[in-house]
Image (cartoon, rainbow over all chains, first blue to last red; front, side, top):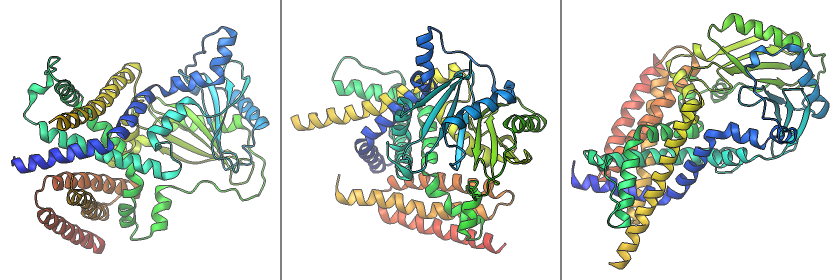
Length: 391
Length: 87
């Protein structure tokens, strides 16, 4: 490789690292904490307080597939008694699982800036009340949006992911043919040498993880910027049609009131259809009530397919008419083509939620190594600056 | 870091985006099957081409050299897209 070219890559690596190092550090640190977001959510929820008051551990729940329709019906009635989900466009109810024995309602009140969350204890169906912003949400907001509203924060994090990817690639190009860096960590000598050794060793040992996390994070962030041109190409320049295909419009209220089918019936019909259509083991994790109380109302049952690299709450989605409980459509992630499966795999790969505890601990440890990589990179630069001043 | 270097760096990334978008569009129109599948394929091609061209351009000592490549790739991409459009 030409010396001149190597110098330019080193310059690019240094420049990107110095300008974005602090933001990358914060994103990696919050991302590492997000490995345990379910535990953080449970910790902040009223269920944890109630269990502490009762002197009991948070209960465990096996699988929402075993839920009785009547129980779900009581849950929806309890939420409806306290919250206007029959007046908003969509209400989401997260079902209890083996980590989190709670029913959680999420929706946005008209004119409200943040989401409302309310809880029901899965043990005795007691209504536990609302909670405001949670620690887990705040940490996630920093990681995914830099705590900014709208698409701007998400896109900025995505662009930062692109630059993190460039940092990794330029780092490899600079350090190639230096396998000895894998084992060098010199404690004796200057601080800069120690930081350099730690930076090289962390970078090389965790390279596949750093690359995967930057790649998936970057695509998740910038997809809205890049996807429009291929979408428009596919639809021969019809932008509106392209947008509709990519993101089907939400069910719209039309003001025409209608009597809703019983929740128990909707649940039974839905589960029977899912049992019939999905051959693999599946776990319902969420139901959504769209335009509830009016003629276009839709209830969706969606969830996870354990062992498949598909988003946790979107591996499958079954939509039923809220009025007559007829099945509208079923989307099964396992039936997607190669690229769709690749795209669906991005989020579970990034968040490490496609397996059990051992994988999450591994993600946590690798997450720490990516954070240390950013910190040592900045330290090397700081040491270099002070050295240059002395000289 | 000189102002020239900053400009060169930003221009490299932005110009890398143009041929990448054209390539993504070209791949998409040449595919058949589900709409969403094609769009996602185009997204992947766009992203990988963007990063690839961006990294390549960062190692170029002379900007005209990377500029010439961008023009060439853009031209090829436009041709593929035009053929795909007609077919």
